[in-house]
Amino acid sequence: MKKRRTGLSTRSLWAGEREYLAFGATQVPVVHSVSFGYNDMDEWYDVATGKKEGHIYGRNTNPTVRAFEEKIRILEDAEASTSFSTGMAAISNTLATFLRPGSRVVSIKDTYGGTNKIFTSFLPDQDVEVTLCDTGDHEQMIREIKKGCDLVYMETPTNPTVKITNVRRIATEAKKAGVRTVVDNTFATPINQNPLSLGADLVIHSATKYLGGHADALGGAVCGSREDVEKIYHYREINGATMDPMAAYLLLRGMKTLKLRIDRQNDNAQAVAEYLKTVPEVEAVFYPGLTEHEGHQTAREQMRGFGGMLSFSVTGGVPAVQKLLPNLEFANRAANLGAVETVVGPTRTTSHVECTPEERAAMGIPESLIRYSAGIEDAEDLIEDLKQAFAAMKQ
Image 1 (tube, rainbow, N blue to C red):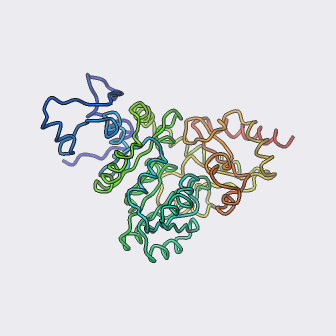
Image 2: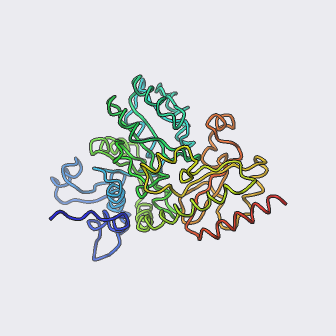
């Protein structure tokens, strides 16, 4: 009889852990050992050359880290996965694995500021051509793919304007052209969206954000085919952007409540976005769960939930932001997102601090744009907190 496929909550709790339990423990141990010893020289050689499963050195693999990699692999329904010290390490190592001088990348303008800096500065300096299309203009992306390229990169929803790209449509065109497609799934998480099932070749996560969920561990991950992931892993093991085993343990612990947290954050973000629409001092609200959002229909088709991230701009520019945010009681003013606590910050000091005001303006990011990462508080409390903060701003 075919085994029943478990739900997302069950997978978040149990996936990838059993093989790494030890001494009767019910939780994966933190293995801090840098090296792993062998008395049998042939076995040591087989493990070192990848002929046999095992560990030889912490920069390459680690049991605690492997448990984390297995959990995200199963949640993304991928053949293989590997991990990194940070989300940006996952992005930069993946790009470096597949791009060479003379390569061409097609992507979108609305990527995370660090990613955008790689596209606008680092890669061009290495003689890699980068074409950034208007986010949401699928016809433009398809035209650029057809001109010839080596990699297509998407981030959906985007950071911080939560714009949506139709993954299936773009991935289909990329496959016709024989081009690899990479999707940053950090904002959506595998609870809300699975890019591989939509046709993408590789999916990237900043595990620091929603996967960990408690703002206490850095990490990144890439999932995809065994062939592609092995190439990325080999680049990472030599270049050394390795995940720490303690971080892996904290991420594993956080992921046990991933489905519970994401469900609550989806609901809270929707409620906050609906409220912000009624505030006179708010110029615009960006959230794919709003029916008027330009990517709403696509989000409905490719996502199971609209996510915990939204952004909004306020009248009065930067001075208004400076008055509003300090009055929020239930929000950390910090450069992070995806935590159990609500986190807020102007994009000029969070997601796109690396960019100039002119560069942000070119990406459609006003200086008064506020990124709001809804936590798991009671929605009524978050809304009341915003109400009193807006009242204080007006005084």
